Image (tube, rainbow, N blue to C red):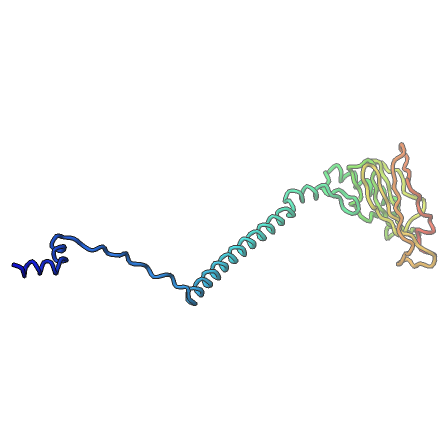
Length: 233
């Protein structure tokens, strides 16, 4: 009897286990993160990759913006397709001829003016200077091949279909129509200096405007003298 009691007293834990009692278990601690060289290298790699992605994004944005700017500039300065035909329809040639084709009645008026020139021994240098849309009209004539003793050019003026005379009583070797608008015609005279040959006038060009003064043709600017309009003999 005493042995059993002594055994129980010597091993009290046995009684506790038999009674179902358990010892508390301490929680496990996670190992601290590595802070050595490997961790630093990993952070550097992540940082470099992030900066690289940001750089690519900025480059893409700049490229798209620049392309859009160029496209907008091209659209801003691109000529409109409808403006060219309208301007071309209203534009006159260098000699003042209308760009639109003439009607049959206008062609007949021009042919009558040409016949008047031919009756005086001249041929038209260009028929395009005759503008039947103006009341004052002009043709530059040069001597016909069959004409003898006739020299230089003259400007033949018409009020509608009626011939009213020439620009001057004496001819000019270099004469052309420089413009015509609003019932006004401008002639360009090339002047010769002393010693010039017929091929090479050196005294410049003078423009003279002509308008109708009632029923009479009137120059608005001085006409160069006859000696300057022909080469020295």
